[in-house]
Length: 228
Length: 180
Image (cartoon, rainbow over all chains, first blue to last red; front, side, top):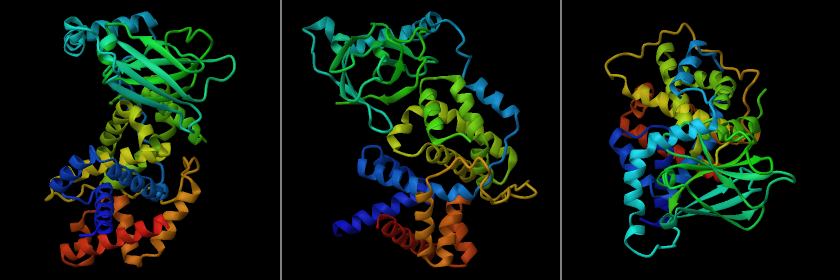
């Protein structure tokens, strides 16, 4: 079969996937391929984007008011507590797992000279591309190096880096970034193990960083890490 | 009306576990997403359960929104539609669709019509017009109502495989047009 035919087969398959026309087995097989196939992911996103306008014709319908409280309850308690408390709950909640994971991930620190190669990275890009940062993690030293590729904070403001560990209810500040070039940040040992599976974010803050311990300005970009 | 940029900013804050932003996102978008669930499921209580699932998914997955490159409404609608159809497919095949609703919501864009790009809308509409009417309708009802190949084959009274070939060909035609 020639290459263009393959491409068309995948295009049709991607459309069938987006439309939920594949039977359970075919759907699972497609999802297995999708996980590591960027070209296939792009086809899926393209179909999703192109077909979504069809839903314009669907009239909005107000859900029953009680549903909102159910949804809000399900996402956990409100964050009206001091930043210190939220950090503590994060630390204590993750302490056991952190200890174990920390040993697994960073145990080689104990065994020999530190390996200073970054092992995973996240690309933080503002929706319009005006700000682009690349964060690389060096597990051996618990460091994140954030390289500013494009853009900076508006005059009189700074960019602050946050980590939302998997399952955490609140972000933890990792520090304020330099306006240009690279910023090297040492992640506290107790939260370091949560970096790989967590989400990082950049927010716009007053000089010196957020005064409240939680992001106060707009969120410029969020990203998760991938292995390098 | 909430602008696309507002919704985008809310999603970004939801990724940071900001409950206030999540509540605002719910207020701005739940009517549209409930409409999507109702359209697919045609059953109020199932649509309510699904809508709840939809917002929990949004809460958990807000950080993956950016990778898709979607406009915010596209992403939200895609999440809602996917979960609604998952639910639809899990219904026991022998039970008829519950359909407890007297009538479907009228087919008109609501006033707040959390807008899609006008050009996007025009493009899919124009490309569907290039297909035969029956095929364009089939694509539309598969997207909007979550029909299966079997549903379509029954509706058009053709064998399942014929239906599959027929629709795949239409999808490829559609891709060619959308790419032009």
